[in-house]
Image (tube, rainbow, N blue to C red):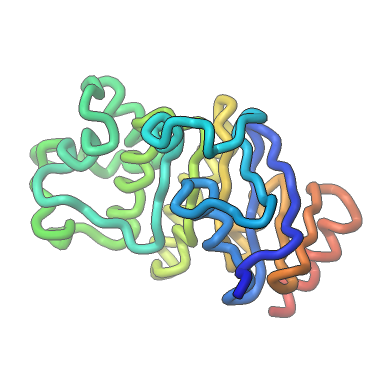
Length: 225
């Protein structure tokens, strides 16, 4: 059974795009196609800088993508260990810059700074929002061309959501050419996007740019959901 049909769209480099729509419409599948966990069938094609993903070395492709999930996983060790999991060659300066860009300056207030031990899955003295911001910093330290945020704020409490959303907004404003793609449900997240991909169903996809009547129409519909 096809998951996506007739889903044709283009994402311009350096922009922020929100993917929205009901459960089961194909949002996560789009992300998995971009990361090349699947290949499209029956003539479908996913291209990066005009090149079919099937013709790009898989390791090279994924090195250009930073990914942040809804439930970030912290590896056992220090905050520094978790950051360098994203880039094992990162310098002290690059680690600090990534934390600052992710609005994770709370790390520097810890007694041991980046050498603070996070415990099993980051459960020691870390809120959901703090873990999520470290996960964003870990993605940013790769200096990816594409940053994917997979419902990065949906599992957070209101206070943590505000903190993480602020980090996302700051990254979007100073992206430095980075393309941001995010699956989103909350209007606060969607409002920061320059483009919307709205899945009405598996076979009905609407692409709209901010400032256009189509964008405003979709945004008004989402307010009612």
